Length: 114
Image 1: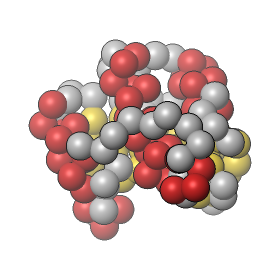
Image 2: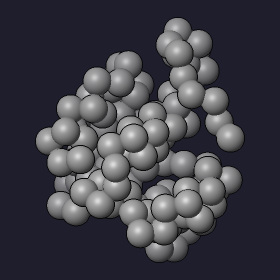
Image 3: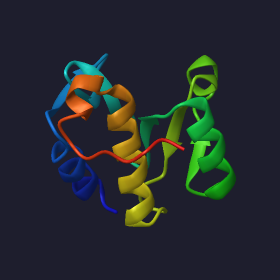
């Protein structure tokens, strides 16, 4: 997936908007960040620690935990150029779901958490 395709996909999620945090491009749902783009070759998605553990085991070449405390809480680097589109879309949707309030989630079909 290209950077432009990732941006288009993220903005296509319900109520997603583009913003910035400390000079880093990000995407939010109702003011809560679900995706950041700190570098050209990867983005950061907001997963639960359990989701992160699973994805790191299944896709070690395309993902890694963010170093430090954020990574211990589930923040995960996703090398979107290396990953297939299905994996990128799945992780971005999960991240959106983790950030979106329950009232908004009920309005849309969302993927179940593992």
